[in-house]
Image (cartoon, rainbow, N blue to C red):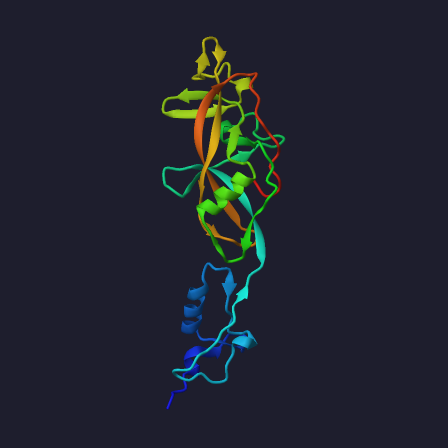
Length: 226
């Protein structure tokens, strides 16, 4: 005779509703983790009056909602697949005239028109994020122009218009040397699609010398990139 194992599957939750018991619920969740599907013991379709050993228990999975995530650009750190320095998109009044991080204030040459989206709860890879940003033509970001000030072991990246008389400013002859950093898309931090979530795109930095006449592309960034 088959044994009654209903108590191994179902229990009562804090709201006095029939639900999977803790161990069975964790086992079910593990099976659908990262797929964007959930299996709820409180759903009437997933409740059975009696479960016997050797019998089959059919459970129904529900697909999550499709969500769009904001994407933040980060400079690559020394650790693979980990964000390093957050890159800030240039806006009116940013960077401030006295800021010392001009090298991390960037402009984008395109607007993000195709959102980075997927089923809530579904995992995404670095490749998924790279493919999305490539489709949006956001492979390259360019910093605002800046001057470099070197004092001892410290380098700051400052407003070129006010750098002429600063001690330690890098010059080309009698003139302040201007620089920009070009950031090239190189990866992304894997994660899970979530409502109001933020994905981290990784860019590799390359500093170049520039001139006052050089132009920086800026097509805005759209509401999903920043």
